[in-house]
Each structure stands twice: as structure tokens, then as C-alpha cells.
Length: 361
Ligand code: GDP
Image (cartoon, rainbow, N blue to C red):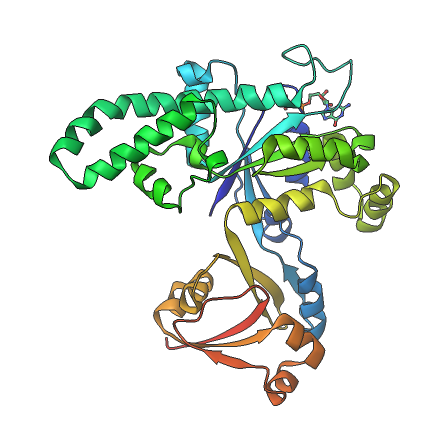
């Protein structure tokens, strides 16, 4: 499955946040015997539709979609120079599908800042600089060969042009992501073989003081720093406390600081979107469940997420939209109202589709 790597300078609250994440680990809750790597937190993507479906179908349990977060320790200035930890750090980032930077905004004299002062802007620059330098090195390594190849092979001309334009962006101190160059884009495809770090989607978690959680001016300033990436504001210590409370107590604590959902829930949802994922829903007496697919996946591809046999033997999918199903109150009633559609192999899955697959075994 796709993973989001969590990075950040020392003492910004990564471990605190990660502890909160692993306390929310849905794998641990639903599959007590699953083996979980110590640096991976599997977090449920909150979806209120599942509880509704469970009501309609009398489902015994609810299984949300999940996002995997990987704790990538050890960014230091000079990581791109590839010394010891730096090398491992970059390799770990290369394996992640998105990069989540944790940025310190909270003020606390008892917690030392590695650079002596709290400055989100400087911290973001420090981290981005290491990633940008690593990408520049990758480019410098391949350029001589690529230049030669482009003289002989026509199809390498476009690759060379893409690499040179990436080099110009990086040399100016920008990430490729901030220029809209990611895996799926034309430029991204040409750059694919270089596995550049800054073509991964970025998201930013600002670890803020409680009063900043509701300070819209402050939040807008930070958002401007990281756009087009998403910014999430949370207090890591508060998240850790929330993870230890039951739902009612947690809601009370949240409301006391002007929030309506935990920062981790927001993080899971935004992370899921940043990875380019979406869900479809299934339900029955055993469970109501959200399944993860890539945005734009077809019905057979969606079936394949449940079982490869479902994809191979796919005949059709009976699809009812969540809203239609809930207002009908049951599948037979939705069918009677003409709200159940039979979709074939070409159908592109839509958000909120409740699905039952028909297949040959
Ligand atoms: P890491 O080095 O990025 O993993 O940071 P830690 O999670 O170990 O946090 C460093 C220190 O900052 C610890 O003493 C935490 O208790 C403290 N800390 C983390 N989050 C917050 C926060 O939101 N507010 C305050 N005041 N302290 C925090």
C-alpha cells in the first residue's frame, strides 16, 4: 500500500505525533495478530457514512480505509551529502509515496529548537534544501550520459529537456512539486527513472500552541508558506491526550479548544487525498467497509482490491449511491425505486458508490 513519510527537524514533535498515531492504529485494533513495523502507524480515514451503512445493513463492525504513516527519523543539515544517517534518511524518503513535514510553531522555552528560534519558514527551507540538493546531485550524476544519449536517440531529447528544466527549478531553490511536477504529469513521466524526491506530493503539519488552533490569520500565513501543498494544524501533545480518551471525553476536550475533530483525523483524510486515493463502500451483516482505490479506477480494478479473482472473473457491479441507499433504507427498496445501476468493465468508480460485484469463479 502507499505510504506517507513523516519528516521534520529534531524536537518539533514528530515522536509525540507518531505516538498518538500508533495509539490510533486501526490495524492493531482490528487485526490483533498482524505484524506491524515499529516505525509504521496505520490510521483510519474517518468516514461517517460507514456508521450509517452499518445501521442500514445491521453490520457487526465498521472498517474504514487506512493510511500508512512511516516515521523517518534523522533529517539533519547535510543529509544530502550522504553521510551515515543521511543516506538512510534519503533512502527512506525515496520509498515513501508522499512527504509529510512536521513543522514546529509551538513556543516552549523548555524545548530547545535546533536552530535557536521558532521559525516555520526557516525550518521548511532547511528541510526542502536537503531534498533539493539530493535531487540536484541525482541530476548531475545522469546529465553527462543523458546528453550523449540525446545526440543519438531521438526519444531521449524530451527527457534531457525535462531534466534540464527540473535542474533550473531546483537550482532556484524550489521543489518540483511546487511547480506542479509530480509522478502523473507529462514532465513527471519523463523524469520517472531518476526517482527524484521533490516530485512526491508534500503536506505540512504545523505543530501549534492551542490558541493558534483557532487563529485564522496565523493559519493563513502558514498556508501561504506551503501552497499548493495542504497545511494541517494540530497540537501534538493534545493529540496524544486525545488518543487516550474515549470518544465522548475526546469530543469534550476538542470542543474546549474550538475543534470538532482530532488533528489526526484531518491528517488521515488529507493524507489520503494527497496520495491520490479514493474509496468505494461495501456493506453486509458482517461489516460495513471502505475500500481504497486510485482515483479514476474502473469497476474491475475496484473489484481486484477485494480479491484478484473478483477482477479476473468480473461480470458487472451493482452500484447504488450512498445517498440513494440511505434514503431508500434498504437495497431491495433502492432497486424498486430504480436507484440500483448495473455497471460494466468500463465504469469509473465514483466517490460514495456502494457496490456489490458479480463475478465468475
Ligand atoms: P521530535 O524530536 O521531533 O520527535 O520531537 P518530540 O516529539 O520528541 O518532542 C520534543 C519535545 O517537545 C518533547 O519534550 C515534547 O514533549 C515537546 N512537545 C511536542 N509537541 C509539543 C507541543 O505541541 N507543545 C509543547 N509545548 N511541547 C511539545
